[in-house]
Image (tube, rainbow over all chains, first blue to last red; front, side):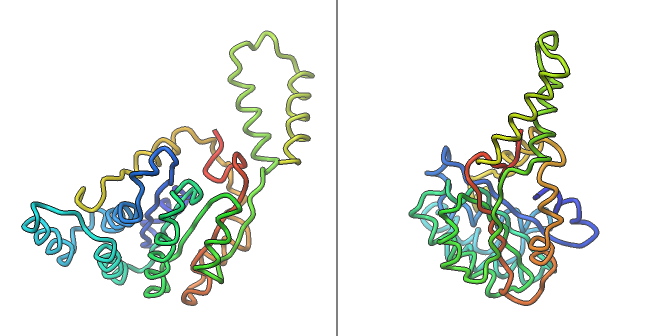
Length: 188
Length: 63
């Protein structure tokens, strides 16, 4: 999805930022670090805006270089976003973010969207986080994702093509494998 | 810029890009929900699209 949006960056002058929440990086993926990473991507190579440069310079002199606070980051993000035509923020696997950060994260996103109607947010996660999402975005569009049979068929066939023991395979077995897997995924 | 955040989501994205099976999930981009979300500019009304699903259904990717 991120790639598909990125493909259009040049022609539609859009900005794409995104992050994959990962339970292996839970401790590091604090709301502040996530918003900082989003800001970093939004700013991109387009040159560092003045307010960001000033904040950075200021922090270097205070307390020997302390990091930015969440509120500062949100303020800077708002300023940067206000100068951009369209921004897409994508966060994958919200359920892998530590539950204690989730409300703060969604609140931060809401603060940003409230200021800019040209900012869009794409989220994924297990069904249980949907409740959280709707608490902060009552009009969020919910899109249930289930295994798509065409995707699964392509996937299984790709794996069979790369089989390391092609001798053991024949046409019938191959057809059986695809059929049985497709029958079973309808339960997922 | 590292001052802003120590996270490097681009690394994970590069991994996903490399490993993922092409064309998977393209159907999502054709749905009415996706198109409306992507195209709408009516304020915060349709700011958020949330794709929910159980583990392993391919929300991130298939590989």
